[in-house]
Structures are given as structure tokens and as C-alpha cells.
Image (cartoon, rainbow, N blue to C red; front, top):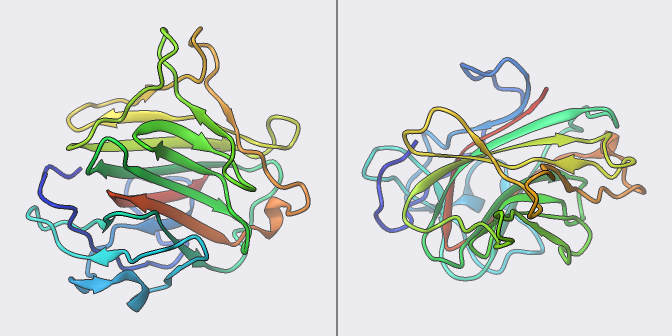
Amino acid sequence: MHTSARHLLCHLVALSFAIPTVGWSQNELLSEDFEGASVDTKLTEQGFWQKSHMTSGNVTVEKEESNQYAASSYGENEFCQIDSAVLNLTPGSVVVLSFDVYLESEQSSVGLGIGPGGLVPSIVGVVQGTFAAQTSRDWATVSHARSPSGVAVRAGAGQWIRIQSRWDLADNDGLGSATLEIKNTGEESFTPLFFDVQQSQEKASLNIHQEHPVTAWRRVFFRLKDARIDNLRIAIE
């Protein structure tokens, strides 16, 4: 986990799918630590990462004071993707996503998702400063994590946070569902977040496209706005 709080230093180099990572027993689809990246270089100039139609700027590659790396961007929403072979998912797959985020402002956005090529996927992470799941199709539906008082749970700027999400692709009548857990630097276990005041709803809908089955999913996406992202892991449970 990072400890540096300097300007949004970023670095990225895309690693291929199915790379084994110590501590992960699942069938990995992606492991991206960004180590060995060319610093001060745009992400689109190295590896398999590329801009999508949702990108209005650039993600830069830099090195942090802690000698670790993180993808970062200022200003407008950034959206990069990796186009791989089909991910070998089935309608009954359960996928675990894990990644570290650092918000530069109270309105930052950062998220990770998977989905079909050419379409907006579901994303989990932080949306305009609040922990949330943002569904596919048009991003019109955002499920915010809620406190017992009904207030959207804010992520807070200026610190690294690890996010973990479990995607059950068979849940919710085939629309899929996602959990959201967080862990601050120094904490040993994740804290589950809830999507209702009663603190009983641990899942948000993924709103999976029924006309684009998960068997055809082939892309990993991440989204950045005034934020950093690092240590991306996606694996089949």
C-alpha cells in the first residue's frame, strides 16, 4: 500500500492476463502493479492499455517517492481499457476485483470494471468522491454506499485506500451483483459497505447486458478523474 501523498504521480505498464501473483489462489485474469514502466510517459504509449471513446485526456506514467508506481490523471475523466482474448467467464462465474486508489480531491472518481468491447461496462470504486457501483449501458444508475443515517459514504482525499469487490454474475436474475469492501492503510481486514440505510443490502446490481453475454467479455477497464490507481487484480473465484 502506498504512503506517499505527493501530487498524483503515476506510472503504468500493462501486464498480460493470467500472470500468477503471490497470495492469490484464484484463476487470475489480470495482475497489474505497473512495475518497470517508463516514467513520464503516457499510458497509451506502452503496454496494451489504450484510450476508449470515453477518454478526453491522458493518463501519465510516473514514479512515486516510495519507488512504487500508480496510474494517475488530472481534470477530466480518463478511461483506459485492455483488449485481450475472451476472459473465459460463464454466467455462473464469481469474479473478485481488488485495487488501490488515491483521491486528489473530494470530487475525484476512480473505478475498475470488466465487460464486453465497445460498450460502457459496470464500474466499482469511487464516483465523485463517494464509494459506489456504477452500472453499465449509460452510467445513469449509480448505487452509492450508504451510512445508517442514509448519507453517501465519502472516500476522503489524501490517502490510499484498497477496494475489493465480489461480482456474482449469476445473481439478480442474471443481471449480476457486486459487493464493495474497503481497507485503509494499516488495517488488516476489509470493512463491508452497504447500499441501504438498514445496512442489510450488501450488493448492488451490475445491470449486465443480456444481449452481450459474459462469455463474450474481453476487456478490463479503469476510470480516473483527479485520482491514482494501482495494484489491479481480477480473478475468478
